[in-house]
Length: 407
Image 1 (cartoon, one colour):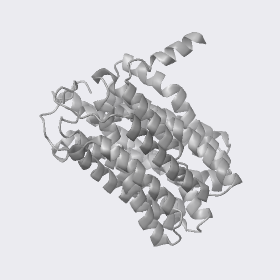
Image 2: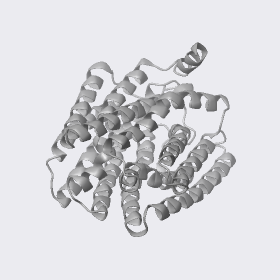
Image 3: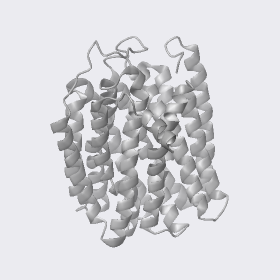
């Protein structure tokens, strides 16, 4: 047991103080993010919206995320990641408090759009901050630590959120979300000194300096793959909670425990898994491929039995895919970004998740409304297998490129 503990701690060795502080701020932020995984349930159960209406509200979520990440990427290149992160957390916190007072369908569409626009400008900035405060050899592990903080917060947040909904009400979640975002902003402002990326920053880009992401054909293929796989992944945050409730009759607190399983598994196993895979010197592109394959498997198992245990198996398979795919795809995106364009590249990378919110929630809700859950899960799995084949194509193209031979 002591050896296991020592080996686990060794995975965190060498990470800078600033990375740990960014992780703390991210944890505070995500621990308070209780509204998002329960938003579809809130809109159906408390506001009485139909599934197609919820789909359009979640599309507004995606549109806000799309514009927010684009603005965040541009601002990161122009004013620096530090100011973007602080202002995103502060204004996003205020937005969470205000959105609970909306009642109409169109009001929710506009309110959720504005809220997520503010909140998701944080995403490209945090990726650039990770590279700025990391040694080149530690970038993937630094990303994994940030993800660990996200998932530790995400495991605690939904668990507490489910309990709060069951014992108090949904409104409390908006207040907690808002206050924790504001606290995270204050912690960052007072404890972290801003740092600019300079010419002396060790990591060297693999492309000619200054090439914008929309002119990089391989990066655009990578972007399309990320949009496609994320379009399916986001079902776990809108359609899947409804599936747990409608098809398996789980209460909000039990749904919170299932989401807790995802975060807790990542907290315990992602860093050792990433450390092991890095020691194997696995290609970042192949790691992304395996992440997509495990995500596909998580949907297939849901149709194999009515036994409630398949929900746990599906969650674990999705989590394994997330643990393998996400840190390496983040690192791949950073590796493909030239100096002076990292904010724009990571902004586009983050926009892939924003587009997935626009497409995924709405398509998922309407597929379920028209075909039911079982057919929807098969469609998602088949779609992911096609995307996994595209990822293998990207791997072969990258191997042929002199710029990306090690990706």
